Image (cartoon, rainbow, N blue to C red; front, side, top):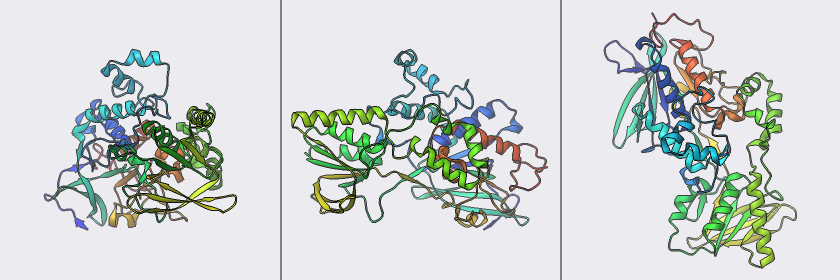
Amino acid sequence: MSQGLPGDAPLVHDLIGIGFGPSNVAMAIALSEHNAGVGRQETVTAHFFERQSGFGWHRGMLIDDATMQVSFLKDLVTLRNPTSEYSFLCYLQSRGRLIDFVNHKNLFPLRVEFHDYFEWAAAKVDDMVSYGHEVVAIEPVVRDGVIEYLDVTARTGTETVVHRARNLVIGTGLRPLMPEGVARTDRVWHNSELLAKVDALDGTNPTRFVVVGAGQSAAENVAYLHRRFPEAEVCAVFSRYGYSPADDSSFANRIFDPAAVDEYFTAPDDVKQKLMDYHGNTNYSVVDIDLIDDLYRQAYQEKVLGTERLRFINVSRLTGVEDDGEKVRASITSLVTGEESFLDADIVVYATGYSPADPVGLLGPVAEHCRRDEEGRVRVERDYRLTTDAELRCGVYLQGGTEHTHGITSSLLSNTAIRVGEILDSLLDQGRTPAPGEPRPVADGIGSPR
């Protein structure tokens, strides 16, 4: 634990961000817009670290015809600042496609196009980010018996840099989730790496793929592999009778409204669980109805023609995989009869979702100051700040990993623009950002208490 002394401290940032995916890009934009509209004494100094060498968001799933599941208006800025120069519409204008997009009459852009928008926006604030830097340690800096700052150590190659912060915002995204006991290999994939793995198959002639999962990504994988490899059989394995359609109706979509976050946050725990049960079919293990219809139409056509390459093995589970380096033997168990059957495949793709990164995994000794609920989950304030003891004066904000406190939107794009605005407001309101419940000091600027 460092003891901060006058004269020996590095430059102090008001905020350091860990990760530079869409959420923290939106955070950087909100900071940039704020700083452009205030005097020097009111600016918020910030820097972000990203371990990737450049911006990238689910690159392995940028299938050429896959579309977003959220409206383009739920971009990085519009719901917070409709006049922002960082909006998707401004991006379209810069690319010369605004009129074409309007004529398209579609709220849902191609995923590859929205990724290009993210890259375009990230490039506009790249003076605030260090790419190729992985945060490896966070150490508390103690002054007068309290943790006044946090020293963030980031590694790039063989070198390390240390930056000091008054606050952190953690936006490290999601991690691919594989079933327990299943390891990824050259023939056993997670769908997050689909396109790169498929490219590596050039020159080979796979004859059978097995895709595990019942959600949007699984269905997209099935459709893509069926189209990409016209001689191969594609087998979809899931425990239902078929893919379930996503509920994207107007009333159900209110679960993603900013006001729904307030309602969820203040609701009793049993009501929180009911809301998740009621509205899980807006996001989890569901598929766009148009894609469901396309897959069924294709399967029926093949049955009529006697050329079945698309197979749906339903009410079943994939219960084992054995990769011998040449083939993968998949064990499939019927949920009805318990009978086990086997499929030899070239590739098995698990479209089994993601899990949030441990929000306090990087905090090291600082994590001891974070409070948890009865189930061991971190407590989070309404402004997305971790609830901590009084000794920790620094704010630690989460972008993700807050579903248990803030609802479904915590890991989705729908509320990103609003969320970063709320975090920025919290930073400005806190001044020196004392721990929740402490008296707020009078401050000269965001981080300079008198």
